[in-house]
Image 1 (cartoon, protein in one colour):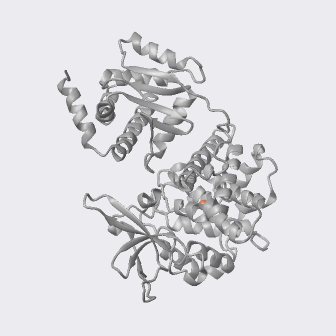
Image 2 (cartoon, rainbow, N blue to C red):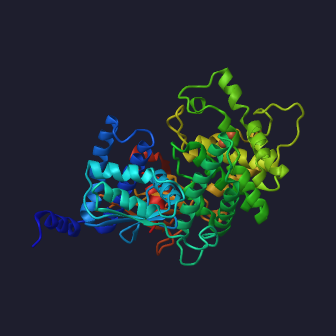
Image 3 (tube, rainbow, N blue to C red):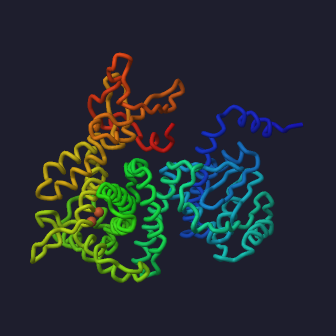
Length: 496
Ligand SMILES: [Fe+2]
Ligand SMILES: [Fe+2]
């Protein structure tokens, strides 16, 4: 006979939409684990402050264990698999996701099975035993399970990480079966993670993961060559917490898309990609308090800010792992704030032309900076406003031709803009029309909701006409997505 609890579990399991629910609960579970793993590095297990955190986390974690009965959390390459279902992580959840992957992999833990609901003691013991494991020891999984058994906990079991052959090089080629959006998402987030490691390691003068960055830049080049609009869509992500790293990747995407239009070779594209990724490397020498200041910089702080291109060059020249450091790369970093009329910084004694890399990065950098909210300027410009400002400044600050290329690239309606259509429908610009004649007729994702309030997506082409040859839909104007409470990214990630 079933106990009332089992009864309830069964009822719960059948009444919910399994996939959406698993992803929501799964993301919540990973976030809770992330916070707890981090806290365990700060407090010892007897700390009172910890009690509250553990209590708060229990529900989120137990919700999923309760639903599933037995829950396996498994690492498969760079994915987290919950009871044989790969977890699709949310944008907000990415940092937690990455942290869990890194920490478990370091300790060679590949799977943890929870056979029963957790309570404060079991959860605490598990987290501390896990985090106290010595990195890189092969028998860690057995050790962890045994340590828990010794404490009277029999409901948690750990298994070792399965090393998949050739994992390192995996993903370089986009196979036909793989959804290019998924590949782009992986490359995008992995690059954010790597650039973060490169920058923070340099701070601690540790070994920099520059080789990995080079490989990721090659992957990004490959994706841009195939279909730049996918990565351009990713660049609409403005993750404030990870600003510098997110910004670097966005600048890389915009720069590569421009390089493609300019007919750059693959090799030149890779160089441009790395330069763009590292353009703000020098900011790692500026204190965080200054970078994140919510008010305007004073003179001294501006002085520091203006030194970041030069500092970037210094750091780059010390990065021996980069192989041949190309003068193009060095100059590109040095000049990315110079501006066409040399009114930017650093101040130069002798005037000359700004290099092509410097000019490309300048355009990409300005656009991304303007369209991203910061501590100081909480409301960012819309893509349309940013382009209008850049056009106004074009002769003084940018190369007019490059700016023209950039605008044709992001479209008059840049990817990710929210637009009102003459049918009174709302849409998100998804892909620009490749024919310059139809720049005002991109492909658009219609934004609507079904009866349950869930977002529904339909991709329409604005060049479509009805039987009388009239356009079915046209853009009336762009709108500010914040006013309509629309999370553009949610629409981007799972296109239908
Ligand atoms: Fe910069
Ligand atoms: Fe920048």
